[in-house]
Image 1 (cartoon, one colour):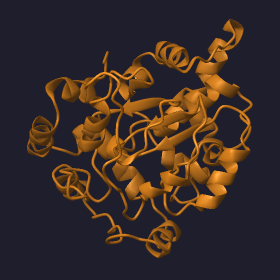
Image 2 (spheres, one colour; image 1 turned 180 degrees about the vertical axis):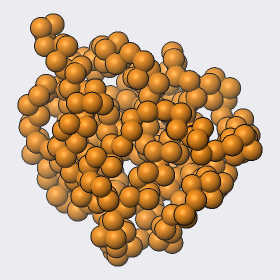
Image 3 (cartoon, helix red, strand yellow; image 1 turned 45 degrees about the horizontal axis):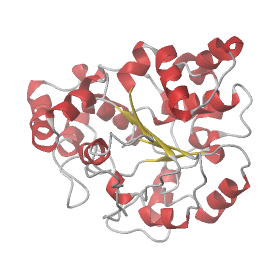
Image 4 (tube, one colour; image 1 turned 120 degrees about the vertical axis):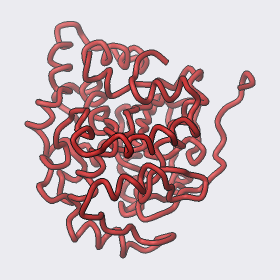
Length: 307
């Protein structure tokens, strides 16, 4: 990329969940933190990490108001913006938008969280099949829906996999149906990985060394934690701690999900796809990855490690 260039928004994402134009009403502040994932890659985990680093065990409010999902079209936008404007502390916001659908703010810091596609899928299967009738009704009936409503999940996860791994919701995507693409998402952010205000973090690395990754995140975000408090901050961000506090950690306290907050957080592990998908299923994904991603990006998305 030429020196001095910054990402530009070139696409609009609007479907049953997304309305990327809502970002037009966002007023950034210096130091804002944007947590970005395609989905089910550790979004809530990274929110808990950032909250722990900033506030320890005394965050100012529940995470669904503390760190909103701005482009989620069923959330009242006026309430979200009022909440963000009222926050006097350092703010952090989550997004699931590809970078070509998001305004880029040089004064903000961006944390990208990635995860191997089949692991994302298994977490998505749990998420998609847990929607309550109330949340489905809200997705269908909230004014402003662009395109078709989200269809109900099939009975067999392999049936969903064959669409998710090979078919896009938007015309420029080639995976992710009936949500949006993981591969296009990571590719748009990967192209700008050299930017000093963008940090890549991988789910595998968080699992392997939470302490070390939190130190790297704290350094990037320029957050100083007193040494005597560090171990407690890391403990707050462990999956076990998050499960114990699930209703205060997950969006909406898990109200939109059968099984509530515990179902939303679920396992927090990798590799469950091996009990569901066979070699032919996985080949669909591997072939698509080879077509869509540069080799270095593909390796990172699967395994993690240095970018």
